[in-house]
Image (cartoon, rainbow, N blue to C red; front, top):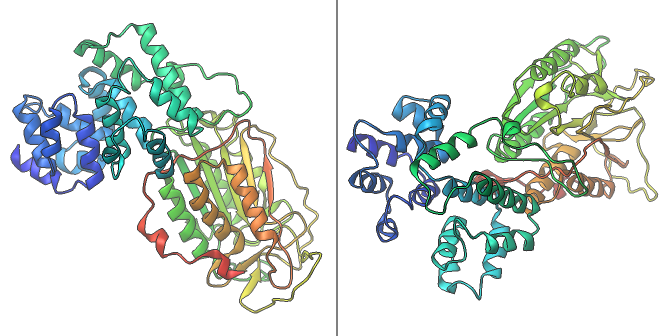
Length: 483
């Protein structure tokens, strides 16, 4: 077992070890945990306490599963997520209380953790708040009797203060469910198994979703949050008639979108240079996927377009309404009631939009995604299904603009604002409004560009984000320099 411990330890990151130590607080004394600086030291401590037997590595599998290191389950322990989930239905060892706190911690941004520390300034020793992670903060709250299995009052107050009403509701639901089941404060191993089994059941069986109310947010939970499909059309050389040009700069958009939505914990897939038929076929493919364990669907389309439609690389158009219809609640039952988001970078006409004050800033480096010779008499249709949000780079009849190396102004602004505002718990409609404001003040190729938002969302859509941003975000240039 020592070889396995060392092999896994070498693959663990610093935050992985913090998570493991938090989850093991019921198995190893706090004094011993504080001395542990390497993963193999934690595993050895668990082994000495009889928690990691040579013939039974169930706890080790569960720990890797809880911190979402499926790669280590596969490569080091010759198992996978599905097999571990089945085992946990009868053999879970980590208490549901500890798992619940861990899941709450993962949904808090760095700024929110700072706010909580400020609120606890007079309640917890200041030196304990200095550089600790949110998990260490929770442990300190437990040590000071401000957080316990039978006492969530302080944590509920913190969630209310930082306006995380979605997490406040989860805490109340957790308390209520435990009262109904009647789990005592010092629960038995049998009860731990029962709770773990309940946690792995389909979400709709756990609790009936409440009637939507003003200010309610769409439910977001375990990663991944959903699929993000990017349709990236660059080469239109085979289009008939041959009037649609190559979309230089589109790869910069696709690259940035991929980084952003991977950071937001989506499964991202890019499809390149699709004809109109292949676009529809791809959308039908995603409409037939099982989204049962997902919380959202995102589709980004980068192409030429005209009013209410986008072009395939063969020069044929596809109605935006047809694209959204492929994943509506009737054709894709596993997405019913879940948000379906479309971001479309494509012209919606051939006209240049003028502003009240015009400042000429034309140049060969800026192109439009319009087809100047095709009529724009296609009827526009807004998705009739619920829970759709469609952000389009421009309003009907007008062009949208793209830099031949830096990408389109709409997509780059969108990504910049997602990166900036998601950690601050802005809902997506508010973020898109900021994008509208950003583009409305720019002068592009001598013209203006006004994005469009169509929404049938019933709740606020807020993407929970990881505690840390990818390093490559820091290397990206500010989009403001492009205008």
